Image 1 (cartoon, rainbow over the protein chains, first blue to last red):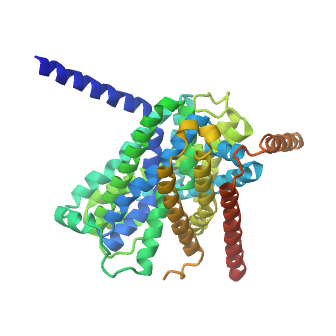
Image 2 (cartoon, one colour):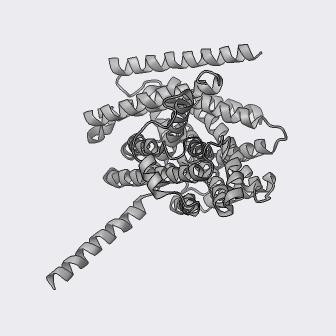
Image 3 (cartoon, rainbow over the protein chains, first blue to last red):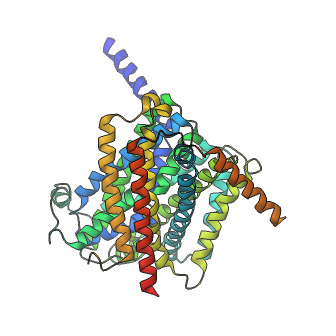
Length: 423
Length: 57
């Protein structure tokens, strides 16, 4: 009798914890899964096609990288109640504030264009014309925010995050050898051919897609908009950790799909990979295309919000998803303006879309190091962070991660400028 | 109307500049050197972009 009541008590306790997690989770899950955006899906598809399962172990290493960086935004947002843009203004003055805000606006808008490229190319596979995709996507995004409730927006976003898991059944459909995946994927080793310039390029690309500037701004603003308090920080950390695990799991399954069906094939974009997959396995290819659309959609909702939140914080406009449109016209106006203009660019005949995609990488490296360095410095400001200031251990870990990210993403950006540098 | 919009925005920018004129992070040697690194890093990137632009022309 005693043991039954004990089991029941434990069950209630765990169930309560799970329920609380689902209430408090959100920003971490959404930002991490949206990290697998259209550009990210292309990178993982190309990695799998080029190196098979040999770089899966490297993707696993990206879990702590993503977690440690994004976890800092949770603490900073919960303690200061400021988004990253406003925190930079307050912490380092107007010069660095304007630099970050304007750079964020440019890089986010360009990234938004790449998300629309991903979404339109994915739905074109099913015969949907790009203009229809752009219109429907803008309408759905309008519906998501007009109800004037952060919680509802977040739960709808999590539903779209769940669609991102479509790559998992997709991988099972192509019947990969579990033995090969475990032995050549999860045991750290150098891929066949050794350390070449190509391998270095793929490592840079995978690191480059793990942390993007908009992620820092988005999660910190989302934490503030959600009303996360200091006592909720542990839950925010769990949320971020679960999100970082899911994002890497999805990346691994994409690598498994293309590594199984398209080994040795040069993949330029995920839509092309979907078409090639369809020739071998119709459903796997279809799932890849659906996942690409969903990835672009998730990226677009987060990126456009990251810019609007940052502008609202700095200019003092009402900038919460809990506001109705008439209460926060500038916030929603900038959100739709960035969405519609980015969507229209994709519809321009002969628009230099490849050039825009390359330019994103270059512009991103002008903002990412600054945003990361500011993040660490702000987390070391005892005056504002109090007991949530970075510990010595956190400083060592995050500094190493930031230095590696800055070096590799810079080299990645430079390789976009000078393509023959690492060839 | 357009003129009043821009003059309002210009006044807003000036107000933001005044509000954030004094950084609230203590400018220790570590912070100063980090900001110096960022400035040099950005100058290097701008030089690379300019070089690429000039060689493309």
